[in-house]
Length: 74
Image 1: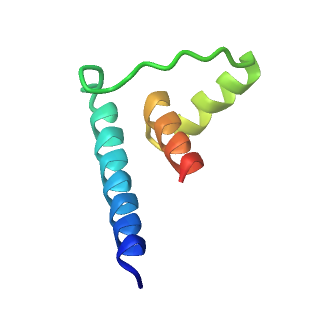
Image 2: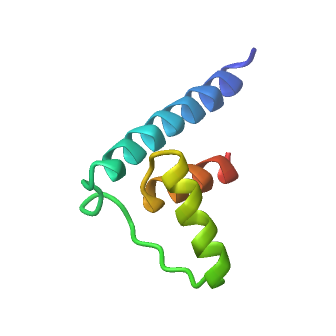
C-alpha cells in the first residue's frame, strides 16, 4: 500500500470515529455547540417513517439522520 492510500484510510477511520462520537452525543442531547444545523423540508409521510425507525432502533430522530447521512457520504 502506498503512503497516500494509508493516509486516506486513516482519514476515513478518523472520520468514522468522529461520526460515531457525534451520534453518541446527539443521543444524549449534547450536540449543538460543535455541530452544524441542517434544515431540510421532507414529505410528511417520510418524517413519520423516520420517527418510527428511530423508535424501533432506540434512537433519536437526530441520531438516526446523522447515522444515515454519515453512511451516505462514505
